[in-house]
Structure formats: structure tokens, C-alpha cells
Amino acid sequence: MGIFGRRDGVNEAAVMAALGTVQEPELGGDLVSRKMIKDLVIEGGQVMFTVELTTPACPLKDEIETESRAAVLQVKGVTEVTVKFSSNVRARPGLFDKAGIPGVKNVVAIASGKGGVGKSTVAVNTAIALAQYGARVGLLDADVYGPSAPLMTGALGQPVPVNGKLQPLEAYDLKIMSVGFMVAPDQPIIWRGPMVSSLLRQFLYEVNWGELDYLIIDLPPGTGDIQLTLAQAIPLTGAVIVTTPQDVALSDVVRGIEMFRKLNVPILGVIENMSYFACPHCGERSEIFSHGGGERTSTRMDVPFLGEIPLSIAIRSGGDAGQPAVTSEAPEAQAEAFRAVARTLAGRISVEGLA
Image (tube, rainbow, N blue to C red; front, side, top):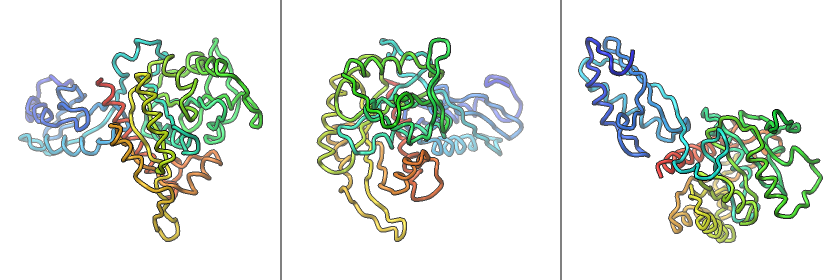
């Protein structure tokens, strides 16, 4: 039965009016005016409906469920409320002023001002976390001189062409492309910038990515040819800057943010990696690289802070073994820290989609 059918008992208009008082806590506006209420069914005193979210990794899903349930229970005659969720990830308006990648709704660049901050670890684990929530996700390893996706995901093999396009490899529900699939592990890539830029364009447009909610691109560190090519070639939803807490890394964060701003790429936020170390034996916390610098810098630069990832032996060993930390149930793997960052990032992308 549809939303506008007539039923005896509980008044359907009253249910919709109640849901109209529930605000979408991140995007603003109420659930009804945003057309987020789907498949309303009333059977006696039982009310069932689906809330269509802008991402399956919605960081405020529990809050929406609690407030929706409470609002509907205030309607006369309602005795039970069942709330279900679906999602419809949308592309940011205006993205397709440039040549978008067919089927790809959002392209997110994961960048860092300098090397050694764990950018690839964050990119891989965040991508997998989004996929774990049910999103359709691709991972493009654009760090051509130091490709790490094959090792970190355990994906093996070589992409094959089908109907003129390369088929990405798959692991952990990700579609993955990397130059590391095409060269021996000990073979260096000794290419000038134009060759690297050409390869990046091929990976963007000549790979069969299919239908994706998010394409996560792991960029090389710094502010060079690949970053410029990416920003000029495709419509980026935004960029995420990964840093560690110490000043030597944070000074490069500022340069990275300013680069993307000059290229008119939205900054989705800053992630502080290796934020602290919690001893797995005694639980004592040690701030090896200081702490909080990422959040302070994001405040100073007026960009969102997406969260912090602790330093952990399990995170490092999982990446080396092709078993990313977010796939582990061991507490020391800090999987929930990556999932929290993924939820916050997904929320930021939804908000950016209103721009």
C-alpha cells in the first residue's frame, strides 16, 4: 500500500505530520519535506516505514531511528513502530560540468602533504569500511611510484581487457585498480610526469568501474603532477588530507589544503593518523607523535575534522599481510576507529552534495 492510501484506524496524515517534526540532523530540514519517508504501511496499531538515507554509512542513523520512532508513537492509536533503512547516494550537483566517470557518483581524493603518515592505510581501510556498510566502492591506487594497494588488500592477478576496458580486481567488496598489478613487485616505475598523468587518465576512463557510490583515490604524497591532473581531469567531490600530529607533518597539511583550494576542490576534512598509542597489554596511552595537531590545524584552516586513528601494531601487520585492520575483530586493530572516520566522511560527502 502506498503512502497516500486510505486506511481505517491510525490516521496516516497524522503519522506523516509526526515524521515531519523529525529533523535530518546533518543535512537540515525534516524527513518528510526531504522525501526520505518511503513505503509507509499501517496495519492496525502497527506502523512500518523506510527512511531513505543519503548514504548507507550515515553517522546519525541511530539518532534518526530513535527520534522517528518516538514521534510516531505519539500518534493516537499507534502501538508499535518498525523503522527500516535504505540509501540513495547522490552525486554532488554540478559535478558533471567536467567529464565524469560513467556510473561513478562521488570521487574522493585521499591526500597527504608528506610521505610516511599512513595515507594508504587510511584510504584502504576507509574504503573497505564504506563497503561494509553496503556502499558500492572502488579504490584507485594513484600512487604510481609506490603502489601499495596490491599488498594491503591481498588482491592478486592482472587486470584483463573486456570490450575495450580493463576489469578491476576485487577484494573485500572493493573494485581495485593499481599499477602494482601490472609490474613486478621489485620493478621501479621510472616515468616522467606526462606518462604518469596519461596512465592516471587511463585508470579513470578506461577501467570498467561499473556503478559506484564512491571511488576512493589514494594519491601520492605532496603537491605534484598527479594531484594537478586529477583535479583538472575529473569532477572531484572533494579531498581528504591525512596527517600525523607533529608539526613537521602539519606544516605540509596547510600546503595541501591550499593547493586543493586553488584548484577549486572542496576539502572534506582532515584525518589525524597515528594519533596516539594504546598499549594492548596495560592500556596505557602514549602520545608518541604528540596529539591533537590535526584537529587544531583543521580549526585554524576552517575545514572539518573527520577523526583520529590510533597507532597500532595490528594495523601495520594487517596491512602487510593483506588483511586490513577494519576486517579484524581484534580490539587492537582499531576497526571501529576506521568505521567512525568512514561514517563521518560519508556524512560530509552528503553535506557537500547540497553545495
